[in-house]
Length: 311
Image 1: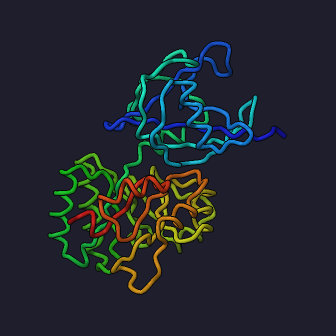
Image 2 (image 1 turned 180 degrees about the vertical axis):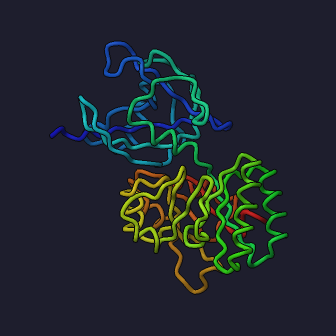
């Protein structure tokens, strides 16, 4: 059995959403393949400390902010690696190719270089996942006002919507689901349908979202391009990871009218619960767009909002 090697890897980003890749140099394993910059965690180092050191040595840059993101394992022919991915949104210095044959700024939805190291397939899919999810509340505010708010949000750049309408009559909900899917498709946005509310025979066009109750009943990943789940405990998060789901929601992080009198997680506990998971986790519960940076500093991929998405 190979010894596990811990590696720190950086998703170095620019404000336009692009990220940096490096091409492996000659006389290394997987020569010519592209990878996220980073390197081995040395004895006595934390993954964060290793990341800061490696980016200085490899690229000549100084990290100003690095947020934990995903942790994944991969077995190569030469090594069993545990990859600690960090998002690095702020850094300074002039990029240099100290160890790579080339560097390139890329976007996950339109990668122009290759091949990628085998461990990075799930990472590239995770980077395609939008950072903000709006959760519908049409049964509370009315279908017409919700659709009007949806159109405004999509026009303003919202790229992910979950239809969650447990209190809506079946016939109305069926028509509403298709209408939201159609409007999201026209805007190039992802629409996730709540699995507990699907009419019989109704197949989501792209996204399926499992409430925690249905998640824990699953023995294998449901079919679908994008499948995620709502979670409230570490056990639920780990089950979502075991199934190979694309994302999870965890909450409620702050006090919210949806859960009156129930204790919130708070940001510290949120960060503890999602540590070292292999898939993106979004924070939910009492959040607004201005909470995005705080959420990501605690390891969240992004945020999901009900009221905050439409106001």
